[in-house]
Length: 285
Image 1 (spheres, rainbow, N blue to C red):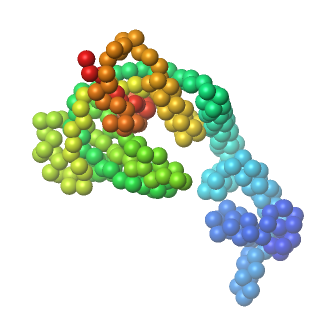
Image 2 (image 1 turned 180 degrees about the vertical axis):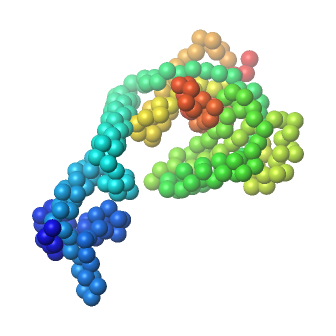
Image 3 (image 1 turned 90 degrees about the horizontal axis):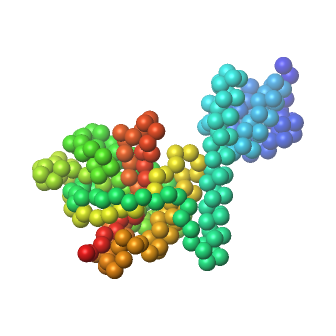
């Protein structure tokens, strides 16, 4: 194969020198040779096809790490991965379209329930919690930190949604806000004090009994868009008059207990939604 300079390779592949240097650093498109004295990069003409493939994959918004893995696959496996990525991309687009429609309706003075809303009763619970203000890029690491604590020192199991771990969003976490958010794990009330002594990094508190309006969260698509639609559906539902609660006064408002996402690990792989978004409230009769 013919060896060409990085400048010629850039011209023929239509990739910038900056992009080629980045792809080299990330191990995506590595030069066939680097001159030891000058540091100048050279490529084989056979790599042009790979470079064009990288360009197309980037147009599909695949991250570089995924492209690196894909280029190392057999063609059939690579094709399957591209197809899977595109299915996810379409699901994401559908979720964002739904969010845009919801926003247009809201700005037009209409409020609509986008997702089906159910209600459930939650008893008083003892909770071990970890609460923190986090930046957007720290959010998932914070969740993993909480899960790691529970895996290292498992808690007694409480069946059903009332025993599932959940995360309360006391404030938005995005480019402008840092929460806080609070991860919570229900524990048996009779053992709460003794269990808390083994988790000095967690705070023990009691959450009062309440009702929750909830929506199941889809697994595929843009997660943030689904969350926004779910929150919008819950807010619209909360504003609707409820015949069964006519004349009742709210003893607890949603803000008192916090919007939360519940994760039921035992539902994974069963076809039942393993996570939902819930808006707590309670009525005083």
